[in-house]
Length: 115
Image 1 (spheres, rainbow, N blue to C red):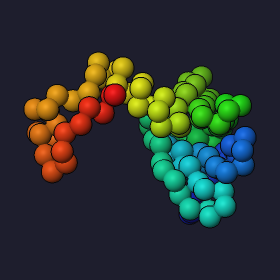
Image 2: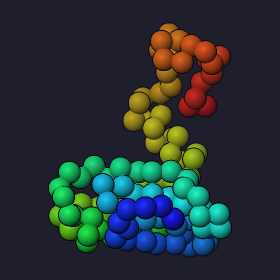
Image 3: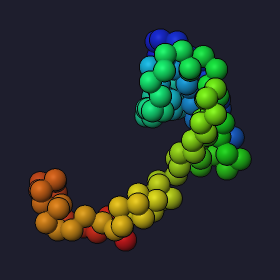
Image 4: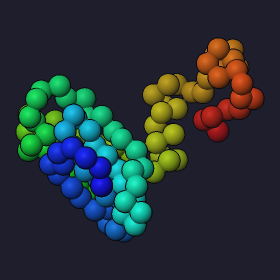
C-alpha cells in the first residue's frame, strides 16, 4: 500500500476503506479490496515527527474521518460527497457566479454547483 512510513491505520466501519496517517503530514485513503489510493488529505501540521503519535478514527457511519495529533488538534473531514458539497457551498456563501465560472473553468458549461 504505498511507500514511506505509515504511523496510524484504521478501517472504515464497512471495511471498504482504509485510512493511513503517513510521513509528510498526509492522510491517505485506500480502497481495501484493490489496495489502490482513493485520495490524499494534508493535515496541515509542519512539525516534524508529530505523525508518530497521530491517530485516526472513522465515525460509526463511515462518513466522517477524524484525526487527532499530540498537540491536541482534532479535525473532522466529511467523506460523503453531498454533505461535503453542502459544507463547501455554505462556507463559500453559494456557487460561483457565471462570470467567476468563466474565469476559472471556461471550457465547461456553467451550472449551479450548489443546487
